[in-house]
Amino acid sequence: MAEDQVSPDTGPKPAKRNVSPAIIGAVVLAVVLLIFIVQNDSDVEVSWVVFSRRGALWIVIIASAVLGYLIGQLVEYGLKRRRRNNQRNHRND
Image (cartoon, rainbow, N blue to C red; front, side, top):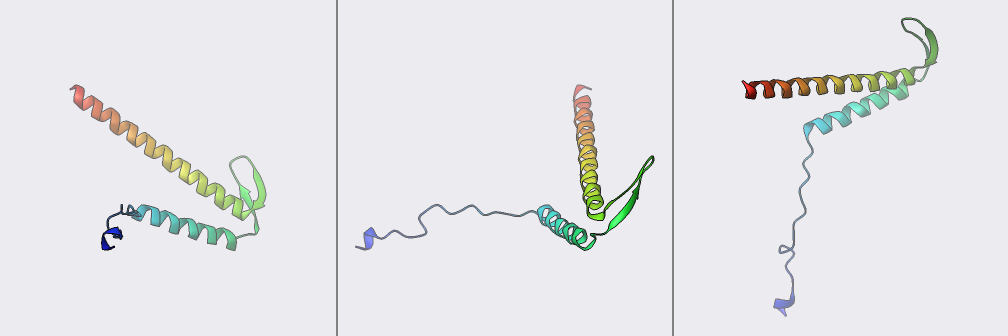
């Protein structure tokens, strides 16, 4: 009978999930941004170079966050591309 029992240690072990500090930081920043948006729900006057418009502050905050993210991605892409080109040039020398 003891031979028929399966030990729980013999089966495959589930993979451990490591959460990187970058993901934790991103989640914390997203929560802070969400709290900031919820607390600032008034209308504001938004002025840009050639126009001025009244709108909800939370839309301005979200638009600023999205634009900041996109600018960061473009800068990162440009830096990676420059690094790749520099590596190619150094190999060809």
